[in-house]
Length: 329
Ligand code: PEP
Ligand code: MN
Image (spheres, helix red, strand yellow):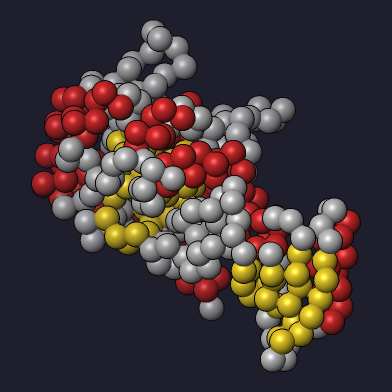
């Protein structure tokens, strides 16, 4: 692989990268072409894409051939029924954990749209940890979701748990693969044959590289429309529902050209933590966030404790836009 170094990079920094690669077992030789420094690296590593001094990497990177920035340096920008993601802005997907009724989803859709959301979420098939918890209202929920889209124009996101149900998702714009299914390789392979946008959530025990390999399963089938989502992982810490891995956002943005969003709601588990975690995701460079928003969190059938109200969402969205503006200056 060849690492093309940015013009004007300090000698010291080039030496640092070269030594680092050597220490990690990669042979490195250096040459200059037309005033540009080039490191020739033996073997394959996606470490190269993580160094700021590296402008471009040339060479085929087999493991992450579709998702890696090495083979696709520019950010992928997606447009879903007019809603852009990955274009440098901070997009919001908002809505309840679960679609509960026609009235509930339409009301919340209108409120989140007014508050700044560009996409609507709502689960119809809920993969719950306990078989005795509310499992979602099923296909009817998908119908109510598409009615909410008709009312508001917001594109929709809903989780798919079983490929046999694909037809029922015809009017859903983004198919979500939940944390519990991140390594359901058969499901991923089948989604790779579809033309739908896929929101792939990180499994709570999965590494960043495993998340990228799961994206590869979808992309290798021909579907390049994958959005990645950090939603918190399991660690020894138990003061929040999960540990929000902010680092993964910065790392993913270096390693892949795919849009990266955060789900602070499932990381936090408590509504009061959602705001600071959203700001952290925005500051870390995420392309957007998916938030659980409910107009009556106390009576929500699922995940009420982590749902913010439409008013709270409005303030989170407004301040996030300012954060994004500040860090892009
Ligand atoms: C969800 O987004 O509703 C959900 C179940 O999330 P996760 O798969 O991340 O737990
Ligand atoms: Mn939920």
